[in-house]
Length: 530
Figure 1 (cartoon, helix red, strand yellow):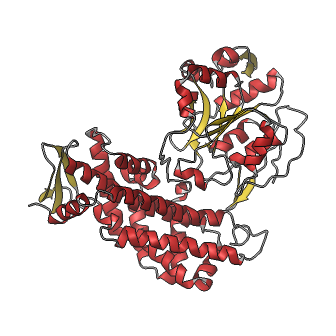
Figure 2 (cartoon, helix red, strand yellow):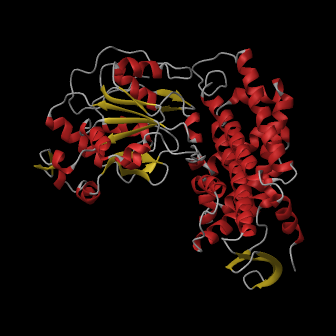
Figure 3 (cartoon, helix red, strand yellow):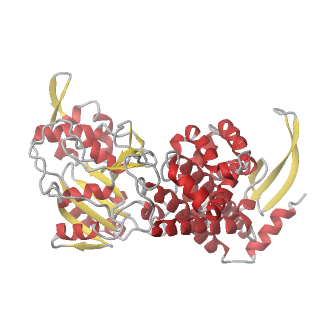
């Protein structure tokens, strides 16, 4: 029979042509609220008990900011899960079968499951991607899925962040009891086993539509799809590798009263330790202002003329929602490897013999990529440490190229080999510089340039390095800015002065310049500034 519930939802949304734009704004608000709370924890380690070596209270301004973040989160929850058409109701509830047809239809029926021996409900969904009803249904399904994934992703990240924030617990439970209750109310949704199951079904539906190679028929579908594709929980749901432990943990958490909210959060730390990291993905609202340069061969050649092996590239992408959650001005760091002809004269030791760098077994698997112009080494959430073309990298608004300090060929050869050896490593969602098994973008520079003393920050019990801390090394005279674009416009004079100005903007990373670089560039490990 025809599913009256879904038909009603379709009629309602079809009558509101602005619903998609509203949903996008709501998604943005949710991301900002969730990220704001985890960022607040990260930037107040002393006040919240994360760093036990220092103690100071939250200022009255900090308390008001925390209140504002919690109220903003509550606003998102009420609209998303209690609104006229709550996003959670847009999920495909039952096991389903999808087929292509002439017109959109939803048929609720039953089938016998031989594995369980139970006759169960399922939906037969017929889609025509060129038809308006199918477009609206796909759009709504992705809106609902992205919304609930944001809830689960953020809950698991918060669980990890508050593990050691002992003071945050008392502040929320005793000093801000009303706002604290709202926080618990929001994340109580993440303890709903039924919502987890429905979200898992929606992930399967989303994968099924991909198999049909349906086009992204609207910009709105593409917007929500970008979040889904970068969601940690969506990835795990698609692999079904967390279903049992999470279902069990969710069931236990459901029994925990609001007064023991943080006790419930802590149960997830062991189960989801890999979930730490920004899962918001690269949700992008427009092209980067420098992307136009990729269409001009002369401009591309001009940029390449400034690049030499081991130079550092820093970028900013304000059109990506995740950019605003990275402390400081710059949001990403990469290393220029150099073209094959530039690398051909470098030699490294292997099995006691001196051989060409390009003949080393850790380098030869990547020679084809070099020939394809993939010379930018960077660490991305997916697929991890990889190489891309300069054109791929330039979907950005700001760029600064930092010229590597002078060093002899022996040292440069060793650093280049070390750079190649990072390719293929996973992304480090813990942002921990003390481990080389997984690498985040700014860690890449820290790991390759073993000859350099780098500034780091202690956050949530681990040492991290921020892109701005890499940029400060240029101001500290260790690297030299040789090419710089800001907000899509090339800056041609006093680049170091301009770089300092950007780094000192409100919200920047504090740094005390040393006024000099290390005098020796021998291959030896140095102790980082802490």
